[in-house]
Length: 420
Image (cartoon, rainbow, N blue to C red; front, side):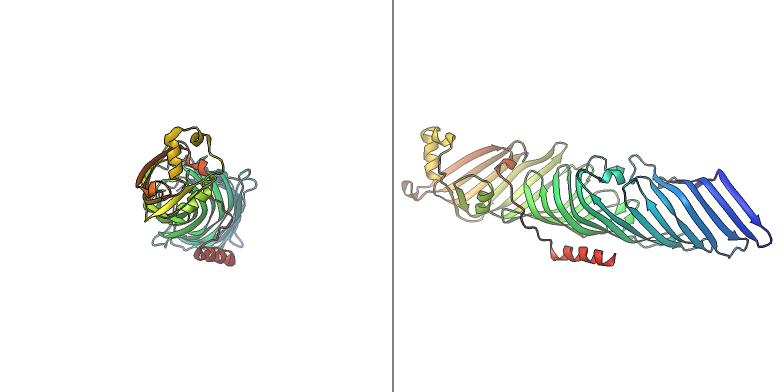
């Protein structure tokens, strides 16, 4: 540690062996951690007895992270400390920028170069048109935008040789945000931090989200994740609901500030009738279940699907009977007319859907359907190949009228509030 105290005033009273010190513009630096404590102003009262307690009052100090970008914005400290030298008990208050809530830090040194502290943060309320994480944590920059919801934290941490991991619980309550490659709505959970510099968590942290939209609207998400000390997020397992089915990813590691990579989304139980309902195509309905795999690539431009393939899990049907024929069917000629006649009551034995492209831009969907229409040529077998292209988002959105938190996550949030 490097230190400089350019303005130090000492007052010594020999009769009662009392020492008083006033510090102004003190400067302390921890180069390895890139931490600076400067503009330190305060008072110290002690006696010349080495075992006598000290009394310290910190009128003000600024705590900064000097890395570029900084992990946290400057904090302004005030508080008191008292006790034997090397084993001071302290009570500090940290205040950030105007409008940023306070944090309280209490604890004690252990006399051997270590110590223990308890920290509690006043709840931070984010709003898309108001306070944003980059004001508190510049390291996020403009990667995370339009943040809303509540962030809170409390817990303990130790330092020194042989100290245990930190145990700080961070509450995420109805957090919504936009960042590459999409947006998240109503993220909830309580995450345990076991490391502070750098931030890290144990494995198995549970989170739930109402919506994760990466061009495909994935609802009712539940995930087990770990934030590693290198800043990577390891997704141990995550599941979402889509069209009454389930989408799953497992063992995926991503850098949240630079999301690039490849992974597979496993799909099971997609209900064709549910897909038809939210596709908002008048006169379309069907029955059957789909499953398969959707390989995903994350690059500088967002999400790309490469070689997605879904197959029917048994027979089903597709019916398309609009009240009024679209122009492309009405004016498409004899071949199109025959196809329209067949799909008014098409009973398929096998349905394969192939997906390729960017869900929000130029997704190509190729449907290969094998079966027949019992009302056309006596149900003679027919193979249909249909190709659609365009933004997948244009087929409609799943409504989110109801979103129930999983019991375990709801319980952890209630326990956090109860312990405050």
